[in-house]
Image 1 (tube, rainbow, N blue to C red):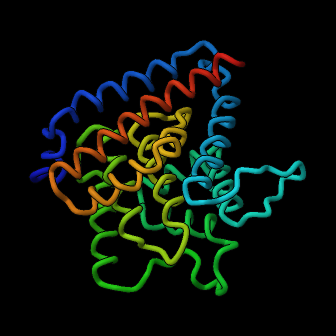
Image 2 (cartoon, rainbow, N blue to C red):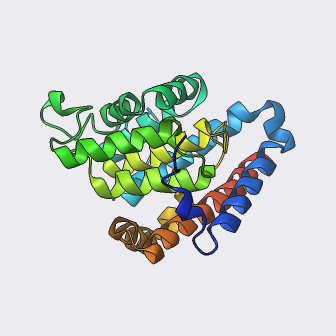
Length: 248
């Protein structure tokens, strides 16, 4: 392997330490007694909380109907994605994400934007343009093994790039947060998707939006702030996972 394109990010102030804290927190929650055998139940609860929070970040409703249907298209899309990131569906999607990231992202768009487009042919198709295609290709290479940076750092990069690139016509926020989750599963950082970092991103929505723009600007400070926010959210998401496990 040649020079790791993301290696300089780990050297930014505080990044290595924050990534390690996030990893340790998620490792600890996977060792929780309730998660040693009953992680499938806690993971389902985590995915539902993640879906609702992800929808709320994009201005969607958080009201869940008893019949399982959703009046709000943003919430409906976020919850379809949440279901795809749970149970056997998660294993399948994670496998595709490792081998063919573009295919996995297209699948996420089809789920997230099904109620948001007038033309079904738009589903699963990135926006046209050489810049979008080139950046998605580079992102796919990173996901497929072109970097060895810690999982939290790669999750931050994938999340930030998809969030600010607007690669798809709609639902980019939901896709970006879901892709971040898939990085966590595919790298072994959070193999069962127990964490709920979306809760922190929703609570810190102003920072979330501002730091995402800082990431897009590409300055060392902007990149560092975004990665640190991601690590903090992953660590806090592990605490949310612990509260779920404690309640079982």
